[in-house]
Picture 1 (cartoon, one colour):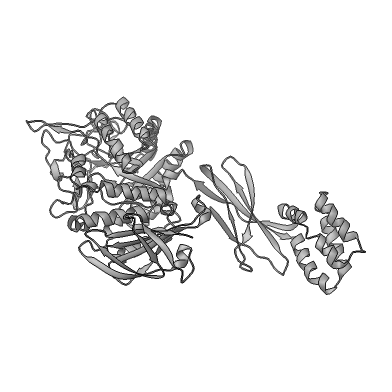
Picture 2: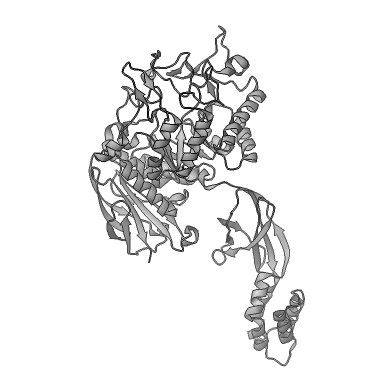
Length: 624
C-alpha cells in the first residue's frame, strides 16, 4: 500500500520523513519515506499490511542534521570557506552518532588537520558511514502528524466472482398431478463443481428459511398461489420457524452444514441472504407485534414500493423497540456465523436506519472480522454512499442500467474515482428482478458485453443463474424475468445447453480465468477511461506497476467494447500511454485474452469489433 504525505519546513535545511505503522497487535514498524520528485515536498513509502484488523499510522518529520551539514560541507569545503568551522560542526554531530567503527573512522579523519580538506570530506562519504547515518539519522525538531486508522479486511471483502442460485430449483421435479418435489441442499450440491469450474468463488443463496403461506404469491407475482406454488423465499417465516430456521423443503441444519462443506471443497464460499422482513406467519409477529407498524384499522402494514406491493411481507419498524430488534438480529447473524457462514447479502438495507447497520456491522466485526456484508440497495446515491460509509464491505450499483458509452464512461469514473475511497462496487449483470431491455433485445452479444464489462471494470462482480443460458424473456411491461424464479421452481438443463453450444459458460470461465491471471483486474482505483472516435466503442484500461503485481513485471490491460449489440463497428482508439506505464509514442505488443490474437499497437489504433462474433477486446500488454 502506498503512503504519501506533504512535508516541508522553513529555510533550506534538509529534512527526513518516516512512516510509523502500527499493526492490529500494537507492534510499530518504521519505514523511511522518500521524496517523490526533487523539491516536490511529496514523500512516499510502500508497506505491506499483512494482518486483518485496524491499523494506525502517523508520519514523523524531522530536521536531518547530518544531511544538512554534509550538503553545506560539500559546497563550502571545495571553495575553502570556513573549513575548520565546518569540520568542527561535523565533529559535534558525529559525537551524537554513537561509537561504531565507521563513526570513529570519520571522527579521526575530521580531527586530522594534516589532511587536505577534500580528503577529510571524502572520509565522511565512506559507504559504511553513509549506511549508518541512513539507518539512524541524526535528527532534531521532530514533529508528528495526527494518527490515522486503516481497516484491513480479507481479500474476499474486495475481490470476488459471485454466482447466485436457488437451491430449490436444482434437482426439482414435477409430478404428473402438477405438484413439485423441491430441490434440496443435497441436490444443489451437485451443481457446485460446475459453478466452481466456471471460476466463481462465492455462491450466493436467496433466503433459505421457512416460507409463509399467508398471502403467498403465485407465478409471476400473482396475488393468489396455488397449492403447488412454493412462494417467495423473501416472505420469511412460518410455523417451521423464522430467520434462524431452515426451510424444511431444503433439508435440515445438518444438511446445510454438509452443503457448506461441499462448497468449501470446491473453493466456493457461501453467502446467504439477510432479509429483515417477515411473512405474516413469522413467529415474531405473535411474539413481538411491537416490531411492526400497526395501521389505524388495526392491521399490520405490509411492504410497498409503489407501484409494487408485497402483501406477503411485513417490514420491521425499528422505532418501536430498537434495542429488542438489535439484540435479536445480532443473535440471528451470530447463529449463522457459528454454522460457518461468513458472507451476507443484505436485502433492502436502505429501508432500515443507518445507525442500525453501523452498530450491527461493528458488533459482528468486533468478534468476527472476516464477516462480509453486501448492500443490495438500488436507491438514491446519498443513501447508497452512506450505507457504504456505515460499514458495508460491498454494494450493488446502477451498473445494470448503464448501457450506452456516455453512461458507462460516467459510471466507471464514479466507481473508480469519485466513490472509491469508501464504496466497493459489486457489478451484478442481472438479478431475478432485473432483466433490462439491453439484455431482453440484445441477444448473445449483449450478454457477452455485460459480462466482460463487469468482470474487468470491478474487482467484484456477479451473475444470477440462467444468465449463461441467455434467458431474455421478460414479463410483459416489466424488466423482470418471465416465470420469475422468486415465485416458482425453475430447473434448468445446463449440460444440454453446453452440449449444443447454447451456453455462455465457456465465456464466463474465460473471464474468471483472465481475472485470476491479471492482478490489475483485482484493483478498482487503477481504471482509466480512454477514448475512441465511435459513439458505441467504449475504451478503458487497467494498469498495475511492477511493485504491486507480485510478479516483478507490470500488468496492463486495454478493454475495448462494442456496446451496440446489433452492429459491426470500426474506429480509431486513442490511448494515454502514461496511464499504462508506457512512454508517449511507444510501440508495444498486445494479446487478446479471449481469442489469443496478437497485435502491435501504439497511441492510435484501428479496431473493428463485430458484435455477433467478437464484441469485446481484452488486450494484455506485453512489457519488454
